[in-house]
Length: 341
Image (tube, rainbow, N blue to C red; front, side):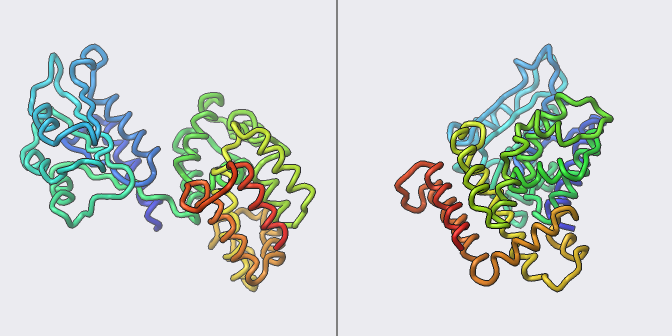
């Protein structure tokens, strides 16, 4: 089982515990899938705090602005007119003296729920701090969902939310997000807000509520690049660059990078069956011909150069590599490079 799949199972287990009012005195919420972390924090707030006394018993701190002693002083207080108070320390990855909280963890106050919110890089479980959190509270590791597992995890997430989804819109969601689970969940929130539970999510729902244009989208661009259809690719590219506010180009680059990585895997498995490739890469049957064609059109060093071009594009966006234009110009240059391979 992939780490990301395991973390989603752990996420569900914690959500069930909170629903049953099984609340720990301390939570360490850490890892890369920020949307899981946010949903758990929202659930903790919902269960621990009473609306009538929330303003007295909800204490929020931030990493750079707070000392550990400030957090401990508040955590050791008693709640006002309520059974529990909630102390949340966000951006805990910026804490200057994190090990000092061990003193509190060794003897947490039963009427306080402390949430140490640590997105990104995790606290090592074999460190004193990691061991202290594990001994006295609940540790949730929001590991990034592996690309090969993301379709499976998203499908389960949708079922858990009370919906079903057709294969094509599921593929649209996954590819449009670059396979990033937290981005997919955020997009699904828009769908869930507009589609009643029990219904099947269809292509038109994704188009309408997520905002994926029927004709000009990242899947159409992928297909045009796979077939090396220059005119179609440039037409789609022009649509993106003229509607840049609605189509964040870094997200498009992420989607294309994920796509060509999968194409590279398909290329390495050309002699395998469709079923074996679908299982290894995590793609549906209806795009197999497209992936095989892309693998054929980007043989040898071409696939490596396509991936390198997208990686360079991303580094330019982040300012790590020098660039002379805006996002639109850099993206156009990258797409043209890929078309000429």
